[in-house]
Length: 561
Image 1: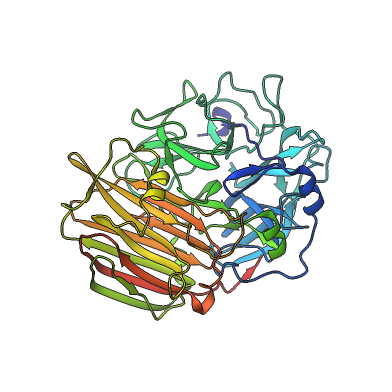
Image 2: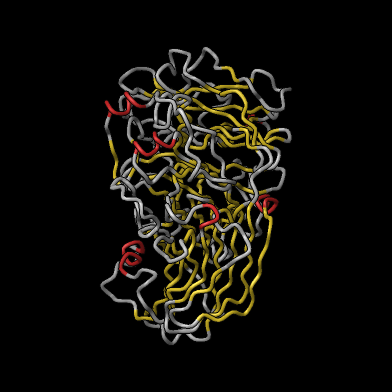
């Protein structure tokens, strides 16, 4: 259909970040400290907890992944970056390119403060491929010391350059300015545009909608929104502009009040220009999350090369600001994930991109090993501080599952995990993996399941518990018991778990990506070759390791970012 008959529409939920950083589970707003430290360059970069195969610059601070896209055979990732220090500040759009989403090369910064419409900051936004195969970036510019925000655009200077190294910011910026009804200091993060019935014909002249696409009272500030279609049948991803056929829509928001990401699955009414979550969706703080751990400010894009939707997420550090300055770096981008709709239609499934498997090295495999109550089995033969582990656990009976106490909050898995940790004996579970463990278990990060019985059904709890992850005596380190429930059919009495372990990060995927949890940890003993990996069972029901496969993970061959 011609562009003249369709128009481009954009979603502009509000965003709040400013001079705030999130450490230790609370928001810190130490303006003077930040202004003094945001330009402190590291003399030496501490390597102990740096990741081996995650996306991470050589030094300094990063946060939100911005504008990921595939263009003419090249993947592009832009990201918020401080070129002058390891804390938030001096933000530019750094830019890296890849042919496989694994091996990355840094190129010139794409967008830096340079014009009146962004002189005080170039904050988060998105990339869109316009008709005619023309990429465009829309981003938030900060125009004054009061953090007044506007929406700007940038275009490639040379479309024939496969790396799109240089981006121009036209003088007709800003494109969108907040009116009197909007808080101009909380007006940021434009999401990817799609072709619709209203708003703009040319991407330059915009008309404000008469009503929001969607709103939920009592949820606080919405950050880093994402809105995209998913196929009801099959696993192929969809271009953002697909509106008809067997599709549902996903609306994701990052909530500043909780620092977690929530999503709903629903319907986009193009005539009314409204998004309506499904009737069984919980739309708010107790709703579905992409990840129940350290995962934030995510952005997805459609990859036409492999017909998939790919998700990028940021994990900040869980230590204190002064620790980051001492290390010389802060923040990583997590492994890209594919997103598909679960066959039930009730949630999304996430899984590491298939290209990650090209980094697999030495392999070990175990089959049909039993774990009685209190037993643990060490997994040897790989570099467990930098590994990829897939395991299928099975159990003969669910009769010993603990009753689910009616007083427990069915939405607060994290609180339940803190009470029912990996060392608290249960019936069916806890069982799982002890990652980044020291030999005598002074330090370890367990990732595990525990099964409860609630009348005629079972409830599966999945935890990634950082409380014993480090002996470091640092009050500023945040060590939560992250957790989520897993909506899984236990008819076959099996549960699968995959954990990506990379020195200071453990990304875990339960039941083939139904529940995902990321933890950031900083062991002092369980580092490099002194790290250990165990499978364990602390439940009275015997658990079998039906199959366990684990690989040492190599570093990407090109990691110049």
